[in-house]
Image (cartoon, rainbow, N blue to C red; front, side, top):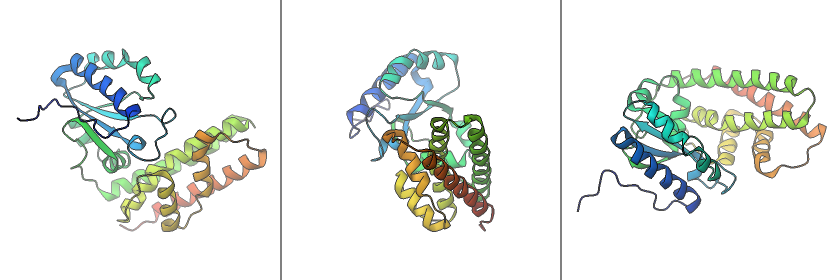
Length: 252
């Protein structure tokens, strides 16, 4: 017997991931019908970095076309999704994905590396990217991170908790950029955070220990002294600056 094209594939996913995705798929399928073309899980929910009850579950919905009905249907599930740690899904169309490869290469490369389509056709597996466009996005994002670090430090006005949050955000944002930089060098990309930082540190001769530590602060919430924060800020800033220079100099 042929499998229905509307079959939902959540087998093998842990219950904290499968249950909210099943709810999302069933209710959106009923609300949107054939306009819902695919649902793809991306990111840490598919790796050992996932921490039930703490990590968010991220998904991409591909629609036939953008409609307010889709936004309303998802908004109606917002409270239930938040309780299940399901982030508001990214809404895209097939044409949007194809036309955005030049500006969202870093993100789409990361989706392509770690994803699982649980409904419909896989929207990412066959995508191809231009290395010069990805290199330019990496450089732009790294230099923008330097600006955010400087402005965040000033805006924190000496509040260590706020500086810590700025550092956590910077460290988290580095992971897809580091994987993209490894891809530019035709080097295998780890899916998990710590191995990504380790491999990139060796490849680009940069100290990423502070960034690795700051990323863990999201869950560990240690007591940090003024010196801890100052040292971490200086180290992460220096690392991002080094990476921005390195990607600018890459010969492809």
